[in-house]
Amino acid sequence: MPLRVVLFRPWHLTAVLLVAVALLLTQARPVEAAVGVTVTANNTTASAASDLSIDVVFDAVPINAPATIVVTFPVGWTVPTSADLTAVGVSWAGLQDVTPTITSNAGARTISTTIAVNQMLNGPAPAITLTIPNTSGLTNPGVAGSYSITVDAPGSAQGSGSVNITA
Image (cartoon, rainbow, N blue to C red):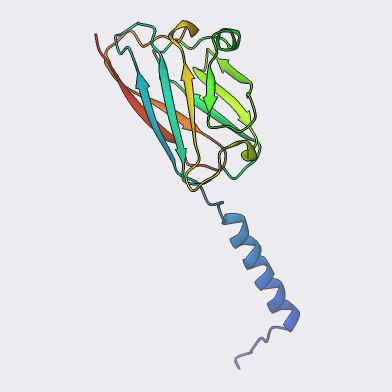
């Protein structure tokens, strides 16, 4: 039996190449900016209220605007309601000409705010600081140990910072 050679027509080759490129593009991921997080508490005693400062440094401005920046506390922390946060002056430093709305979800142990990228300070490593006063209702876990607080923003890699709670 003779071998039969099948030649592709030019449009067949073009169609195959287009499908291959489309598959590659759907697998591409956006560039993510790394997040560095430092957590500072003025009182690290278990079950105590504490002034908490969370410093966040991005390698680049979060890509997706507006960006919702979410701070998640581990199990054991008591996170106040949105109304409590607003009443005591929780603040985000490092934002230009804006006082962002800060919301919380006590059940999910999160505090978040949505900001536009152009509200962040410019520079090679834009930084923001979330400051939560001890009068907000945020309390340390009741069990001593090391706890990681995570910060997440769309278009950025998640970062975390630890605080050691003592008995």
